[in-house]
Amino acid sequence: MRSVEVAVPGHPYPVLIGAGALARLESFLTGRVLVVADRAVPELPELSGIASPLLKVEGGEAAKTMRGVSRLLAAFEEERLGRDGTVVAVGGGTIGDLAGFAASIWLRGVALVQVPTTLLAMVDSAVGGKTGVNTARAKNAVGSFWQPRVVLADTRYLASLPAEQLAGGQAEVVKYAMALDPGIAGLTDLEEIVERCVRCKAEVVAKDEREEGLREVLNYGHTVGHAIEAASGYSLHHGRAVAAGMRAAVRISASLGLCQPSLVQAQDELLAAHGLPGRLPELTTEQVLAATSADKKSRAGRRRWVLLREMGRAELGFDVPDDIVRRAVTEILSS
Image 1 (spheres, rainbow, N blue to C red):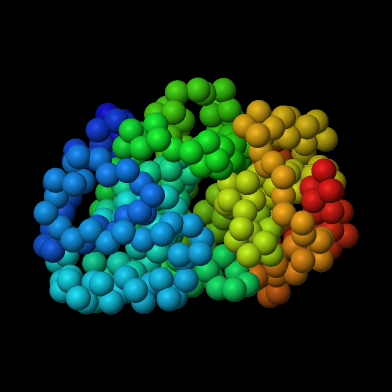
Image 2 (tube, rainbow, N blue to C red):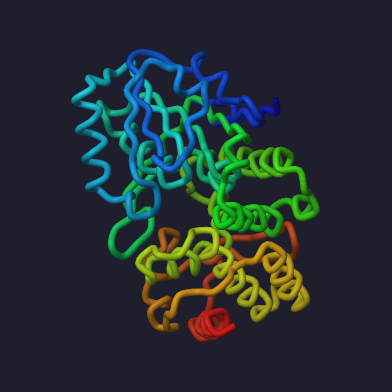
């Protein structure tokens, strides 16, 4: 079993990685327990053996709405989930975001255990405490920072994961390789990949829990990626959208002279090896540019870009001329 500590000041917690990690679940439960699970996820024996209410919900970005949060809060109330209770979120990133946000506001916050079941959630979204739901115009615009008690990344879930979900998760893996740890690009063992990505994120989150600066580096590719998701009505998998966003970000980096032009091709090839980004929705440059205005990193109405200096070294806070952004977005939408 691999273990990584997320050393958030005042609330450190472990991320346990490997086949059988779910066997540790009971040791992290207190009070009344309510499991919120994606109905499409197979139920492992360790989960079915817990005597607690199980609330199954539809996964996907469509679930991440205030209406979805209201349904969960109603269930918490009906099940009399107390201040000493525990919410267990079982599913991909959307379930983790939804259940995590509901847990953070129920009775001003109850304990949360994250059980990510997709590669994307294991390497990224289940770690770090960011929760939230979407509005009609922006991704994760309503949310909170609420750290879990533990993250149990049981890799047995990956065995039944659809190819589309695996590909989407690889986009976040590529993000970590490009932004923080180039050695990740050459790994093939999934447990090692998850561990290396989690170590990257844990180090950043421990220094900047609430995204006041450094943590923005984890959003490499997400400015255009989130915009494509929102403009498409969240019809595109998050990972594919982020892959497209990374293609835009590296082109902007090269246009500004921040990185060598060869890095554009190197990243494109790394993404293409995983079938990313694949075919994008029929969107116009104007639609995507309009959606970037809702990016949460914006300050005083200006977008703040995370861009590359070299592989494994992303930097944040760039203000990019509109014509360079437009050119990059047009290129990635047409290629």
